[in-house]
Length: 445
Image (cartoon, rainbow, N blue to C red; front, side):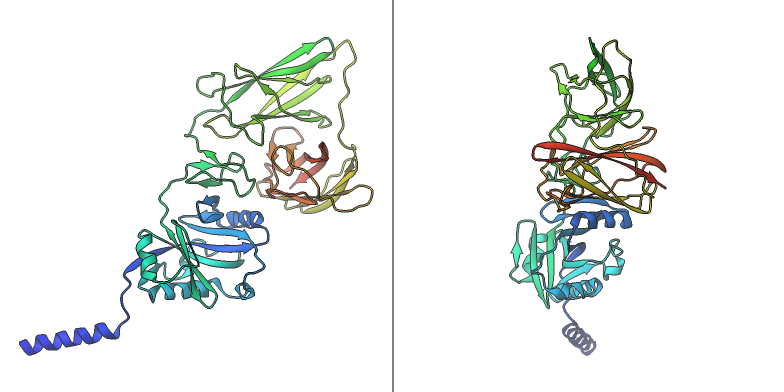
């Protein structure tokens, strides 16, 4: 009996010494960090393809979240090793898992193909990241000097050009979001990777819609302005507190029924919470489109139709910010241009299909020489502002460029077309302290 026990013990020792040590810690795949030429465009493509949402991951970067994993993006660094373009991300993941295992750390899942972000558009990757509940313990077990380390993450050189990041397991629920891009969310405050606006606290779910009362101010020459009152959806109380969005608490667009008159103005808020605007309007039918963000609420875009009757005395005629020639491009792809003042704006449209994210690319040049314009100035906190409306004024979209900051010549938008049919847009740039407005006609299939 004693001989049998000794034999069993010998076999156990032999087997245990012939096998690699079992992992003493565990991490889960958290993110892959890509470097691309245009992070905003890459995020949009990935969000659409994977049905994820754009996020800010505190201490790690910006990208798209799918389940509990992330595709993060940074701008391409030309100092990156060129072979990163060629190597397979699946191969890199396997190499990272083997490197961790050799240091007593088990990575899950076992293969990159099992990850929900495996279908992300391929790009030039920089490093692979894993999250650890025992962050300090895992970093200590790796027993290597990090290339870079913070209280939340450590980046290691795994050899052969492979970089592996260990991040502290995040435990903060989404608490902040971008008022202009609600799919951009974060557990902590930061800035939107798309428009660079400060993230604001996410509101509690609310039932009902805000409404807006409009009172036209009449004078000897007709309508000289208006008063706007925004009211709560449940109590009908006057809303007094608003969040500043693109330097203003309320953006008001005034569009005539025939789509020939356009104004982008900003009423001033009075002590009682109402907004007042001095802005003469010629006789006609108009749609007022108000874009605002009540404190602790979601972004609102409210439309109200108003009629300005004829007056006995002459009224100012509608101001046109560009020529009235009509160009209606096809939905697949079109290129056309329009001059205003000393600038010419060319527009290329792609994928204008109802319910889909299209692409509008504007190129600004000197109207006389054709030279690219690169000295555009920020206008209300953005490189440009665009209003897109259906021809019957039933839908309106207030958009800002995907580029966080640019002086030109190229600025792009990715609007989702609400429905098929004819549309009109107005895009506004600022140069030399002047705001120039360019109208275009579009059609969505």
